[in-house]
Amino acid sequence: MTKITIFGVGLIGGSLALCFKGKPGITVVGHSNNPHSVEKYRNREVVDHATTSFEEAAEGADFIFLCGPVSSLEPYLEKLSKLELKPGCIITDVGSTKASLTAFAERLNLGEAVFIGGHPMAGKEKSGVEAATSRLFENAFYVLTPPPIRLRSRTNGSSGRCSGQGLILSKWTRSCMTRS
Image (cartoon, rainbow, N blue to C red; front, side):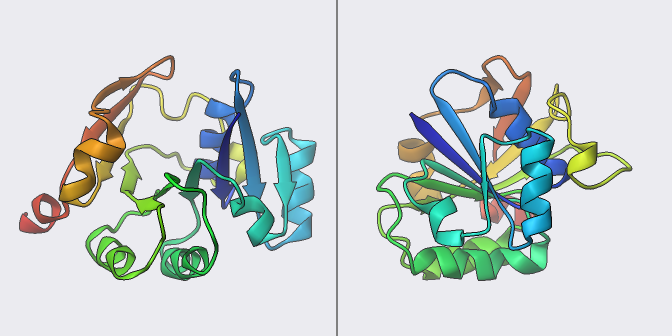
């Protein structure tokens, strides 16, 4: 069973959850510090499991999506670096900034987990889990910014359309993004 954890189940995080939920062999876990939000995720059936426990959400995860505000991403990464993450776990984010976050992640000891910056080119005028939809990423670009040395080994050449979702993955290096 593949465990996908989403920290921050709002518009983007909730839409990701809905893309994965119900797929064979995948369990989607949502996290919030707010018990009211966790209850909302459960009631709306956006995730398979919801929790206020950071550790429970991260434990055994194969993929971790950090979907909170940009200002929360470094603290999330730092907290994750203090946990024993599953070997091979891929951590990514959906924030709009990459250079400083990727540099911060490179300084952390994530054990055998790896951080690959990400940015979905999707959104809408509404926010929150109430606005989440499984079709938000349809025909949208999702830019990945892995450290150059890990580009091939961890993403396994994952450029192109993501099976069944109409999601177009694109790989950019941090240097490519900061040159323009």
